[in-house]
Image (cartoon, rainbow, N blue to C red; front, side, top):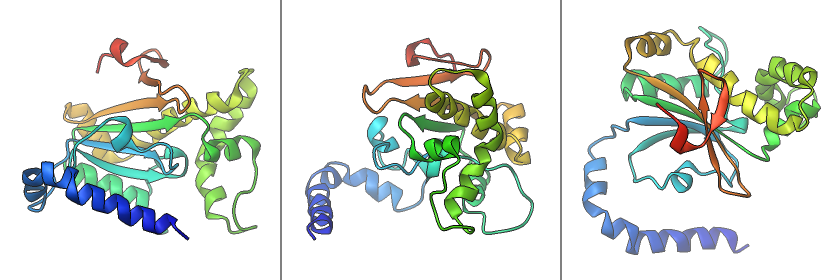
Length: 211
């Protein structure tokens, strides 16, 4: 199978090109990281934050999972990988911005909308994870939206932002003005980025967005 060999060939291009041109940057990063932003995005292979935002190494702390979801705060129970990443970003790295990045044609959101079982019967990790969208799904189904898939993709961003605010350390820092939350939506087919204006609840182009 040539796919992994292609991955290693990509590393060689990086090592001989981008790594050399940014050698000083990598030397600095070897001493530690201090990214000002966190991106919570989907693990979909088509939606890489580093590619979409053309960012340099060390600029963004990235958490990627099925359907770009942030869970609500929980004090105990389970192995809370997403919550641990959020805690590390805010309390230890002290990021100043968190962006929830949704996208078009999201398979996890489509499954949540259809109520379709994606994983192992009775014990599916995927189905339990996308249940975070259960209430949003009901709202979208009752809304009369023509494109319910897209509507739930947009609603999922708002759900994650609301869930982030259930973390006490996030709510506190947002109130203090040292942390800002954002939502955005990427169109795979057209490359368009829409940013959420939380005051109006609508999505607009980047040029119209006021942080």
